[in-house]
Image (cartoon, rainbow, N blue to C red; front, side):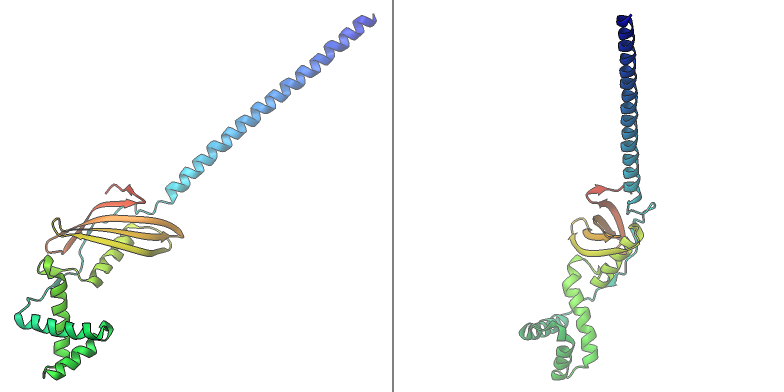
Length: 217
């Protein structure tokens, strides 16, 4: 009888142990499933966050009409004024005072200071930018064009430009630009290629990329 009771107790103990093991296994399986679900949810949230952080406008603007200047047709007299004034400016090494210097030269040569000053500005533009044709996008207009390109195509609450570089290729009439930006505090590199047409009056973006990834136009 004692043997039978002990046997029954043993069987009962085994049942408790097996039941406990089964419950533990179910708990572990449940924890694993929960962990997998958490990982999948985290990945989905991360992907959604990346999509939400896209700084490119849904509808990109690729055609722009920059301010273009018709350059002066330089005469022999213009070139003489250029050499004279530039030599004087180089001697004093102070281009910030060029207006004052031009006024002084005008008085020395019996010219109207204001008239010579405006002529000088046109002469400089023609000398510096005339190699690419009779028309040019001067620096202020070029900066304005790039500000407009970024304003139209980059989306963010706060857009800051830390640096930029450009390269004009005369053979193809294209300009490549690369900007280092901070958009809402995050750093980005934005690059694009502009094709110039119709005496620079039309600037067409033909390539655009963010952090090296090309954007479909």
